[in-house]
Length: 105
Length: 416
Ligand SMILES: Cc1cc2nc3c(=O)[nH]c(=O)nc-3n(C[C@H](O)[C@H](O)[C@H](O)COP(=O)(O)OP(=O)(O)OC[C@H]3O[C@@H](n4cnc5c(N)ncnc54)[C@H](O)[C@@H]3O)c2cc1C
Image (cartoon, rainbow over all chains, first blue to last red):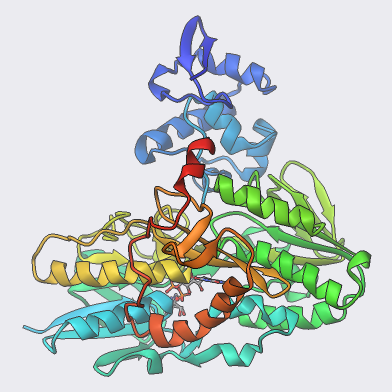
């Protein structure tokens, strides 16, 4: 299992860099992960999504899809793509320190 | 005291559960099936209509005639469910009380959630084969298509029969070959997923077939807009796919009454349930079968069939005050039509993804491999549907639980 170091702490991640143990995540890690992923400075809007991701993960055991984010996070799908250009559901999950969203079957 | 079971929806799942329950229960229990119309469509046939391989009118039968004697068919629109009152409000006024409720109202298409799509579908700037009318109109459009870019697009998951758009691409390839104009046609399959299919071993097989047939695959394409007049799809991240003929599978949601029923559904109108017992999370006396369920399983008729066995047994246990003993393992079984009179078969469950081998045992249909036998299986499914699935019969050799014998499960250890 690969590990990475954020905010001076070693955390376990999968091959694609998603946290495998969300309890290892701390807020200061978010900006480091965001920088790695080419997402610039985290704004309040970014944080609204990141916090929502963690909340959903705790409630449901999996991060929401883009469509679910657009319906329930208070941020439209268009804006989500502005905030996390290369795929909001995956990028926000990675930055929020939760496993890769399962996606649908 | 007489008890009443109300089944919401008289499609695949609702019909087969009602028939199973009618056989299992005596006259002290009333069973009422509610649907807004009396036209039961054999949906798997919609795939063949565009290519002239099935006639739309042959796919439709009366809903009420698929129900056993002793089941009441109530033709009405469902307005909402009032969970606290144990009753359903219908659009013709009278509320219908229940002791047990079975949600079997399937999935609905939601083209209006994608910019430009409703207009494009109405103006025939884009097509869809997910409705009877749509697949018939597409048949005319394909017949008049002499060359250019055919783009097949899935807006987002979940959709009914997730392999159907891939099958459509395979059949389009074969159709244009038969017409001798394949070289003049570019076929593009644009999907929001990062591969053709979500499960790895199957994805490899299908990707290989798509490539072999010269079908271009665009992955992680999240359609933000369908521009009918401009003939292009635009993704949220600004990519564009130009088309001459677009075949779009719209977003799916649950039946719209679910949104009007407080506490019943998810943000998409699907109904969360225990994935093993199929009892809803909303109330113990509410169960879910088929496409309406918010559980991690494909939306397919075969799934509704396997679930139907579980739901019927658990509803009987519930009414008798006994624990719910029947458990669904996620069993899914799909034929994947690949053109040239061949098809693949996949068989899987919550735990085990599709692998090669044979079904239902070491002697049987080949899994995850093209064969004529599977194509015949796909065609035979239509008769099995009306005469086996809908009557709620157990089909010999095809058990509710996924069989392990015959499967090359060892490939999974290397799948990673
Ligand atoms: C193009 C296509 C190809 C497919 N191919 C296959 C295949 O090869 N194999 C396979 O296994 N499956 C296939 N499927 C999927 C299969 O048809 C569905 O999974 C199955 O029909 C689901 O059954 P259901 O009972 O959940 O929903 P449905 O059969 O859709 O029934 C839902 C019912 O609820 C009723 N309803 C909804 N809302 C209301 C309301 N407010 N008031 C009154 N009534 C209401 C509707 O009228 C409908 O009759 C395919 C589907 C499509 C679209």
